[in-house]
Amino acid sequence: QLQVVESGGGLVQPGGSLRLSCAASGFSLGIYAIGWFRQAPGKEREGISCIGGGNSNTYYADSVKGRFTISKENAKNTVYLQMSSLKPEDTAVYYCAASRRFYCSRIVREYNYWGQGTQVTVSS
Image (cartoon, rainbow, N blue to C red; front, top):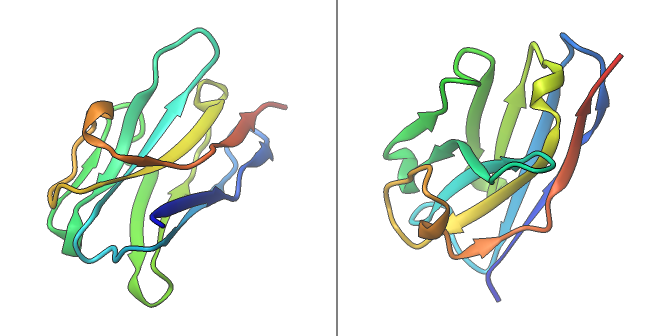
């Protein structure tokens, strides 16, 4: 059974850091793309970062570029999203998702398997 599970969310002060994890099971990250998405209350889900199968490509939304870093640990079949210089507007539920496509994108409908989400709250 293909599955992705997020962890690592929480409450952090502005300017702080968090690392989110996306653990994959039932498939190899070597051939699947993984995307990170977020959804704030009343807003659409948006793609903020992704990494292609075999690290073929990466993507960062302008809103997170230079602050977030996506990486992959093949031995653990896990993708990470290191988030730094967090702002209140980063507050959202963060989701990871897997796509059968080799190259990743920010497009929600291209992803086939979704995690349950993890809450990130940036507040003083």
